[in-house]
Image 1 (spheres, rainbow, N blue to C red):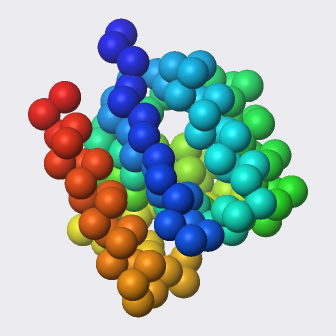
Image 2: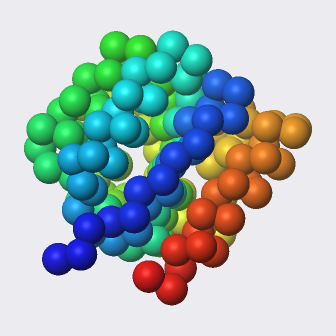
Amino acid sequence: MKEAVYKWEIVDDLLIAFGTSGPISDRDWDGFFKQLQNPQVKRHLGATIGAIETNSVQRKAASNVLKVRKIPVVVVTSASIVRGIVTAVSWLGVDIKAFDWPDLQKGMDSLGVTGSQQDRAVEILLRMKANNAAR
């Protein structure tokens, strides 16, 4: 299976990540995970086209960091399987919610992302999505 494209950027205290269907490479995961541990990051907005695949080690590591650092997460995806995984991760004590793409604004609101930060986050996320939609 073809690896996922996985990109991220930080806007102020918000880590924005975007991925396409497929497994995340170790290289991409390591880079993302390093940013997730960055003290500057206080919130995380993740988005996908399709279902990103993480292995059990990756999921456990992310869940632990998110719980310990108390980082709220919103995942935006049209993939029902991803929304199901988000629900399961929330049962592990992670502050995480899933929204469909048409509800991006609701997701941003639930993270408290407003004003110019929201404008920049939406611009970045939609650019990432447009650059990888044909993949």
